[in-house]
Amino acid sequence: MAKIANKEAPPESEELVKGILEWLALARGHSEDAEELLQQLLSLREAAIGPLPHVKLLDLLFAHAESILQAELPGLQQPTLPITRKTRQKTKALLKLLETLAQEYFNSLAAHYNPQDALPDERMQASLRRAVQAIGAQIQIHHLVAAPPGNGLWQQLNAAYRTARRLGIERLSNTTGSASIERMYSDILLKAIAQPASFSSTELALISTLTERLGHLIKLTDTPPDGAGDDVFWIDLERDSPAYAMVRRQPGEGIRPLYFAAGELAAEVHKLAIALDAGTAPESLGLPNMAGNAAGRGVLRRLEKLWGFPARRKFPRRRHAYRARVCLGLEALHRLLQRQEISEDISEWMVTNESPEGYALMHMSGSTASLRVGDIVALQPRDEFSPRADNWHVCIVRWAISENPEHIELGLQLLASRAFSAQIADPAWPQSGPMSVLVLPEAPPLRLTQSLIAPTGGLAENRRRMVLLTEQGNLQIREVRTGDLNEQTGVVEIFTLLPDDED
Image 1 (cartoon, rainbow, N blue to C red):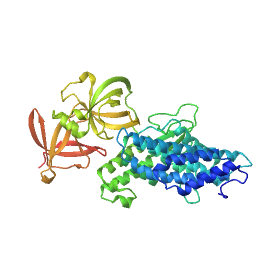
Image 2 (image 1 turned 120 degrees about the vertical axis):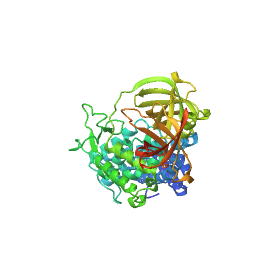
Image 3 (image 1 turned 90 degrees about the vertical axis):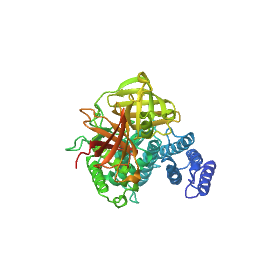
Image 4 (image 1 turned 45 degrees about the vertical axis):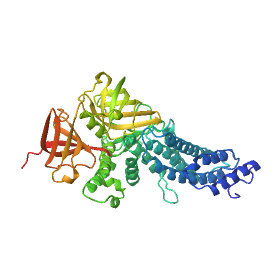
């Protein structure tokens, strides 16, 4: 305690410090310690000790918070939507703890402007680094539970980086060789522009690995990179928001944004995808095992587009407020189109806006237990409610947000105004049996051939001599082959479907 407390500290402050140290000596680093650790932080806030002893004690509490975070994160990897109240309470306690830690480190920086209490530059760098870590961890938790980051969180992160730039320490590594503040900041930006609401928690873990490995390719500059194209993003350090793609939104007048290009990063992701497709083991590329399966390769393909070729918005959104029924999941939709009873898979939603490309929905009633980002759903607008199976619009779930246990919002991309169910089998692999699939009809000029929707990993590109069984009034059996893989998520794959009329 003598090394922590200030000699001039009043007795009550010495008692507070003593209590904090005794608690740390007995704490086990379990996730249940989050609320108790928060109380120790609040006690430290009340202790009248000098800046250096204060920040040293704060570092000890921060290290314990890291242990708690590592113990808690695995439990957030597979949340249902909406997440349970128990999980919501755990995340609430973690977020409050991390928020308080970040604020305490920001408060410690005030000593830099007091000549009597000025902290060394390396101490300033360490405090800013830990503030960025605490804010980044909050954003990560929000991503894992499919919730938008809280108000002011990005503004805090941007302010931390802006302060590091003002002090000229944003590119310095610490004594242990850890990443610089700028590298930590740019990694968080990369995860944000990857549209985390459109990925599952396991896919987000793969994205984190990729940013850790390739994030050094990002350079933040005061002017747009020379020769860059549609891969340029910008960020305003005064705003409470992450980066925007230049092709979707231009910087306004009177601001001084920072820019970065992600094309080189996207090119490296493309090389990794090619290596994985060629059979290279993920671990030899420094990637988790998930990168080697169909879902992982789908993540890489999507990231290549999101980072290197962000899409322009083609159509304006029109606000609406009408009810719709939604059938969740490929299997449920297959049964629906076969006119089987699936009432447990139908839920009611409110369409809040739409465009020719898709819909935004808000959950009203019904089960969402089978809801997964990347899955296929079918939507039937209120004015089309009927038992007919041919008036369900087939969509893919592009993103999902759950701000509280009673609230879910979805973004759907429209694939087709109708579909029909089918069974597909490969006579060369009779042991695998038939697979339930959906067939989307041609829709010129956007889709010149039929498309096939199948579970991820069940088929492959250019797979020939398969038998497709459909029932559209009459039973039809035809020999088909898969063409290009047009879409791949952790749940479904969409192939071009072609007749196999070659000898």
